[in-house]
Image 1 (cartoon, rainbow, N blue to C red):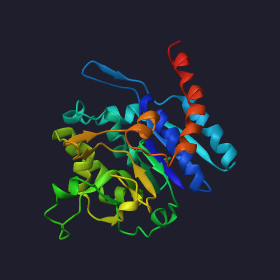
Image 2 (image 1 turned 60 degrees about the vertical axis):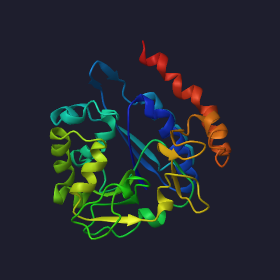
Image 3 (image 1 turned 90 degrees about the vertical axis):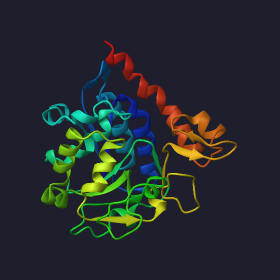
Image 4 (image 1 turned 135 degrees about the vertical axis):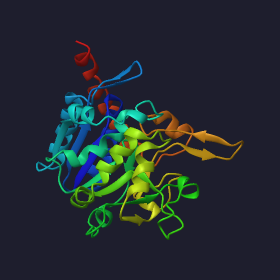
Amino acid sequence: MNILFCGDSHAEDGVLIATLSLMQHTDELHLYILTMYAATSGKSFRPFSKQAAQLIRSLLAKHNPQDTVELIDCTEVFRQELPKANMSSRFTPYAMLRLYADELPQLPERLLYLDDDVIVRGDLSPFYNQPMTGVEFAGVLDYWGRFFYHNPKNRTLFDYVNSGVLLLNMTEIKRTGLFAKIRQMVAQRKMLLPDQAALNKLAHKKKIWPRKYNEQYRLQADTVIQHFTTTFRFRPVFHTLTVKPWDVDRVHSVLQLHEYDELLAEYLRLKPQLHATDMERNK
């Protein structure tokens, strides 16, 4: 199974947790991690480290000797087509790195893109192995966005897909030029959710799958992928809620969620090795 992650040094914890969860439900894994050096409006970012990638590689080697991890520096590719209008959005530039996948010949034709704040809870095979002929990507409706956004060209009432879990058909994406068109749009037009908005607006053909493959609100009995997005709660008063998997104390105290205790205990055991790389970066 080919998995795509994107991010800077802050994504290392999430990618580690997601990988540990993938190992529980997938026989063979090939991870591709896109990263880069970037800076915006006086803020600079550190790339996903080679040391963190090596830690994940060592874990996968024990899982299956055929597993692989490839860390890909996209700095130059990104600089050639900067998303100028959205470089200072509420999201980091790394949220748009997946839009450059068509420019990287080493990537396979079928990729499951995952945000770094997901935990895999079940078998991904039905979703990953689905027929994709003529389809650019498959995903799940955005839990809240489906009520507010709609492509008028689509006859389906709900069609706004969350971009945190996407099965990408790179052959079709290259054929239609989807990512190239999106890069042009995010370079010229400022948007609230840059890559997600453009992806939904410009997609030629997409497949929408059941909620259980990208559960963005609350864990359900059939959830296959839980996505820890910012969501809304209405009690005791209306408020936003953001809890990420690596914030283990708040997963327990705020979400009252103990489903992943064993997984997160393993993450906490490995975390010192992950962040021992900080000293190396600062030398």
